[in-house]
Image 1 (tube, rainbow, N blue to C red):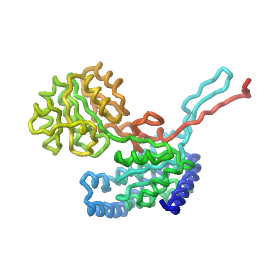
Image 2 (cartoon, rainbow, N blue to C red):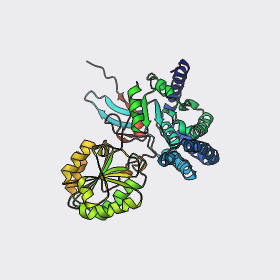
Image 3 (cartoon, rainbow, N blue to C red):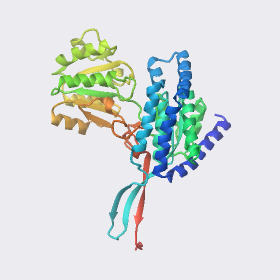
Image 4 (tube, one colour):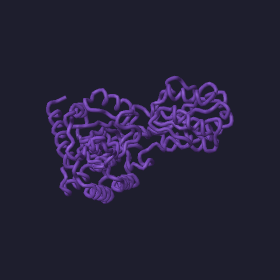
Length: 420
C-alpha cells in the first residue's frame, strides 16, 4: 500500500465526516427535495448512464464473466427507472432523524428519553450492481449520513456517472459533494486504507460474495454489518396446500436465482414428498434447474445428482437446488439450525401450531409462513430501498432501511434536578 493512497483515503474520509456534520442538521424538506431532483436527474441523463454501463458490460464480456454476473451488472431503461423510483420512495418515507423513541418521567421529575441521530459516515463496499450506488446514496442522505462508496472495478464507468450526477445536485443545494463520495482506485490497497479510518468512518457495510465480506471483516478497524451467505430454506410441511407450496418453491428458486434471498435448499415432509416432489422437480428441470437430492429424493425421481454435505452448506446463486426429505418439523428445524446462514427461511403449512413453532425456533433474520424467501427485501417490507441485509444480532438485523442507519442519544428535560 502506497503512502499516497493512504493519504488520499484519509482525506476522503475526513471530508466525508465534515459533510456528515452538515447533513446531520439538514432539514427533511431539503433532503426530500434533493432526493426528488436526483430521481429526475437519473431519468434525464439516462442516455449517458446507459453509455457508461455499456462500457462496463463490454469489458466484463471480454473478461469472460458469467451470465449471472452480467445480469447483476446490467443497467437498462427499466433499471434506471427503478433507481429513480427508489429515490422517490425514500423521499416519501418518514425522516427518522430527530424522532423521539421513548420519553418517561423519573421519580425525580426528570424527563428521560431517546432521540434518533445519524451514524455519521458510512462506507459501503459492493460488487457489480450499479443501482446500489444511487440506493445507498439516497438512504444515507435521508438518514443524515455521508457515504463513501467503493464499487467493483467492473462497474467503474457506471458508478462514476451516477455519482457525478448526484454530487452536482448536492453542490447546487449548498451541501458538500463529499457527502456522497466514490473511491476511484480499482485495487485492494484503497479498501485496506479506507478500513483503517475508524476516526472518521462509523460503519462499514460490505455487499457481495462471502469472500468479500469475510475479507472486509478481517481487515476493518471499523464496525462491520455483514451477512456471509444466503443459504435460504423452504420447508414444505405435511399439512399444507401443495399448490401453494409449488408456487412458492418455484418463485423462491427461479424468479431471480442470483440473489441472496433465493432458496438454496428445499426440505419436504416425508408424508407429502411422493405427491409433491416428482411434479415440482419436473417443472424445475424444465426451466433449467439442476437438482441435487438426498438418497430418498433420488429414489423418488431418477437421474438426480446426490446432494453432499458441501451442498447443504452451499449458496449457489444459480439454478441449482438441494432437496432433502425429512421425517417431521423437528428434523427440518434441526437441518436449518445446522446448515442455515440465519438469513431467510420459510415454512409452508396450514397448521397454526407448526407455523408458530417455526417462527419461534428458526433463528434467522427473516422467518416466513406461506411466502417465498424472495419476499425478504427492504422494499417489500416498506423500507424503500435497502442498504443491505444483516444476519448479525447487534445494531441491525435483516433488511436495513432508514431506521437502521441511525443511532440514538439520551436526552433529559429537567427543571433544576441535581444529584444528591
